[in-house]
Each structure stands twice: as structure tokens, then as C-alpha cells.
Length: 528
Image (cartoon, rainbow, N blue to C red; front, top):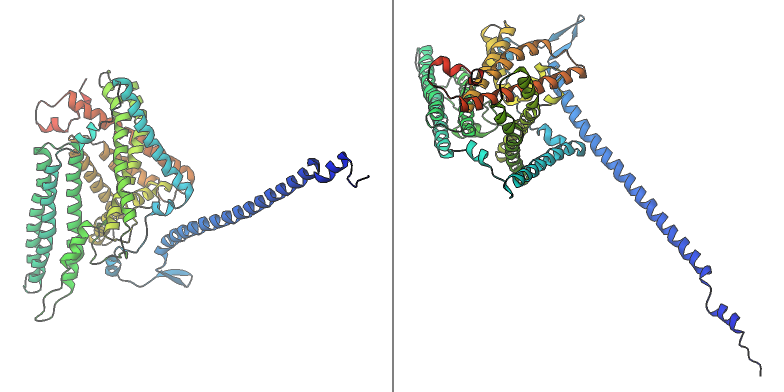
């Protein structure tokens, strides 16, 4: 009997189709899905790219707008042309001289620049160099001693005797907090009630100046010399001494004219600044006194923690620069005879650690330290520096490197000199500010290092003045920015070289007497 069952071969083909018929359909569908996913990712990446470029463009436009507003600000007082000539607003000389610094809320420039990934990468490169320093120190110690050693003996030596530093700082702070404030209150109470206003003012000023010279002048020097403080502890005492002197002077300078002008009515007491405003001023990161400052609404504690960590990182960074790049070079150099070749090589070997220490001091103090106190006190004006690295003239570099100190020198040195000279002798006013700044810088270095070697004074007061007048604001070519950086490199190399040589000369050839000539003569000139 016949059946309807097909042959074996035909049945096999009908029940199980061949793989060559199905594989192409699956592969084609899989490829189509991959292409769709790729197109979606490309569209998404393009959208992200557009958003990132828009954000970067907005940030750069904000920075440029601020720079343009600051550059145009001096011309806002110029009126339209009259008969073809521009005329300024009719303000009197006293009104112009009374115009002081205006504090406005603004962040630090590096905080804005670090929001751009390209600039933040440079910061990451410096962190990588710090890690390399740590690894190289560990590797050298392991090779020399056969074990991993990460000692910070130089760091502990530099910050020794912190107990003495603490009580000395407490004495200076208590004096600066109480004596200038209550002296102003006493003088202000007597000024409008006595006939001889000039006699009261001169007597109070002389007494206060004498006390200032003793407590904020001789006392810190006595502590540094008598207790033989190490270098970092010396710098803490001396720099705080200078800061308290500048702050107390600003407080008296800003409040005394207000007390003199505002005559109280009968039966009323003169109005004085509040004690809390003066206490706030002693800690806030500015040297110009105001009774109130722009304040932020809250404290960013994460920012405080990150900034504190950066300060500690800069501290260890400086330690590794000295240990790895300075100490080995100059410790072995003291055993070699002096020659022009060794001197030239020592200067050029000092350029790298010198410029790294310069950038480190700028970032650690002018950015991190001042921003730390600004954040803790909710101080909103964070313009502690400007873009000095773009300067094409030394005149602009001096104005933008340290805005905090520059403002104090400008308002209480340069501008007051012009006011006393009836706005004449501008060159003399500028030179006087340079000399005062150079003397203070040299004083701080001499007291901090423990010897007198006026390298900083010569570079600042001599070459700095020459460069200030030759490379002025008329120089706008990028070539002058290269020249400025080359001068900074060489200047830092010379300072690090000569100061390190003198440090080891003081150790190997100590003084045999205390005569003035021996105290001011560098030991490296005669030590062999």
C-alpha cells in the first residue's frame, strides 16, 4: 500500500531548513541594529560636544567681559567731548583723593580657570610631578639604606619651636587688637572737646608710634634672635609682625579722618567703628580697612577641605624641591673650589627649583591660604591677584602679582605721597614705594634666613626699577611676555643659588665676632 510519506531527502529538507538560508537574515538584522546604535551614539556625542563648547564659550566670555569692564573703568569718569576736547567730571582734588578701594563680590581667577578642563590639566601635571618626587625619594632611600624611608627631618627642623611662635604671636595679636582700637577711641573722645586739636593728635600719634616700635618692632626681633628660631618659624613671626603693622596702620589711617570730619552734636559721643568690625578685619584677607565688606551667604566646607589639602600638598612639594633639587647640589658644591664655571652652573641649576618655588609660594599663599580665610570668614572679594602670568611689562607684573599688598602700597604710599606733594613728583612717589617694598622684602628674608645678603634688595630696588621704566605698559607684544618670564627664571635662579651658598657658608665658616662689618658681610665671599 502506498503512503503519502515523501522520500527521506525531501522530508529532511521540509522539516529542517538549511543554515545557509537563515544565517544571512540574522547577520543582516544584527548589523542593522549595530548601525542604529552607532548613529544614536554619534548624535548623543554631537549634542554633548555642542553643550560643552557652549559652556566653555560662556565662561570665556564672562572672563573677557570682566577684563574689559576693569580696563574701561578708568574712562568712565570722562564726559563726552566739548568743542572737540574730552573733559573729566568736575570733581575736586580732595574728592578724587578720598576715592578708595571698592570691594565687590568676585571669585579668584584660578578658581574660574580651573573650571576649564584644559587649565585643570596643568594643575594635574603638577600633582603628577609631586608623586614623582615622592617615588624618587623612596627609590633613592631604598637603594642607599635597603629599606623604604620617607623622613621629613628638614620639615620638622624648619617648623621647630612652635610653642615659642604661638605665645609670641599671641602677644602681638593682643596688642594689635586692643591698643590701636582703644587709642583711637581715647583720641576721638578728646579731639572735639579740646582747643589744641593738633597737640592732642601729635601727642597721641607719638605715644602710639613709640609703643608700636617696641611691641611690633623690637619684640618680634628679640624673639627671633634670642630663641634662635628655625627658618620657617622665623618667617611666621616676621611676616605676622609686618601684617599687624600694616593692618593697624590701615585702621588708623581710614578711621581717623572720619572721626575728624564728623563733629558730634552737643551731648553726643563721637561715632567709632565697632570692635567686632576691627576684629574681623584682623583676620580677613585684605590690608584695607572697611567697616563692612561684601559677604557670602554660607561657607562651602568642601571647598575649605580641598583648599586645606592643597596647602599641605604645597608644603610637602616645597620640601621635596629643597631635598631633591637644592640640598644635594649645594651641599657638595661647598667642597669644590670657587670658579666662574661652578658659579654659572650653580645659577642655571637653580633656575628650575627657583621658578618652582616661586609658583609654589604664589599658589600656596596668594591663592590657597587667602582663599581659605576668605571662605571661613565668608569674605566675598577674592581678587587677591590678577593674571600676572600674561604680563608683557614689569609694571603690570608688579600691579597684578600681589593685589593685596599692592593696594596697601598704592593707597597709603603712592597716593598719600602725591597728596602731600600736591600731586607732583609722581616719579619720586613711585621710587619711594619701590624702595619701601624692597627694604621690607629684604628685612623679611634676612630675619627669616638668619643672615644679611641683599640679593633681593638689589634685584628689586635696582633691576626692578629699571625694568619698571623700560618695560612699561606700552610694551604689548608677546615677545615681551617671553622676556619677562626669562627674567623671572634668571632672577629666581640667582636668588636660590646665592642664598643656598650663603646658608652653607654660614654653617662651614661661622662668624668669629659680632662687629657690624662682620654681620653685614656675606660669609660665602670669604669661606673656602
